[in-house]
Length: 242
Ligand SMILES: *Cc1c(COP(=O)(O)O)cnc(C)c1O
Image (cartoon, rainbow, N blue to C red; front, side, top):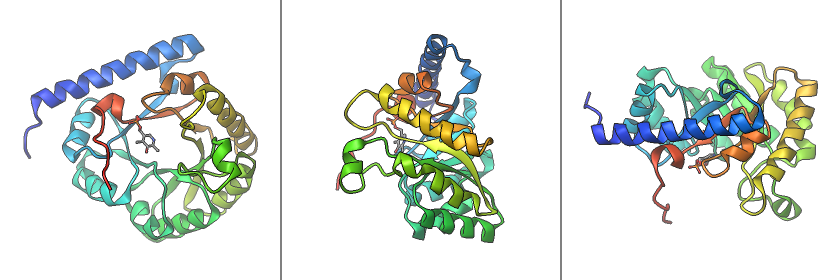
């Protein structure tokens, strides 16, 4: 195995330290403990060598948003025993691949996808924790499906029931991406309310996946349990062309 680039190790170490400081400060303000917060390192566009560096620095959870990229990266780093989170929009024809390496799917937004994941996970003898992706963008709900995906908040309980029908699926809680416009605290407060309704019926569904590099403070203030962080850890991604 090749040795990690020492300069890159230091960059990632600094990113991780800065993120931990932000989490601690936000927890202080919110009267929460940093132990309540899990960090999912989103490694999209970054190489498997960065996944190794993150793991060497104590990161246990990594996330990806495209199966084409996630599947080979998960295979290359299988020896690390990491927990893999799938966080992007997912087509049912990718369910078989995702069910083969993912432990948590944050982006379950329709019954058909739950059925596909439930069937594929069962075939593979695996269990998947599923989060209901909630659409917090009023504008996109009013029109066509928003680019960021997710169910209408009023439909979350119905989808929860559909997920729970599958033996191989465990309902973990809810996930959302803050809308591009507006105050993320307001959006995440709405997510917290949906999370409460789901948890009232399914007491083990306690996860709230919210907060990215730009809005992790607002997410912590509104009860997030899982932060999905890419840029703050690994640097800004090149814009994807095409
Ligand atoms: C890329 C991505 C993230 C991480 O975003 P950063 O701004 O890089 O922290 C989180 N969630 C989802 C769904 C993503 O696609």
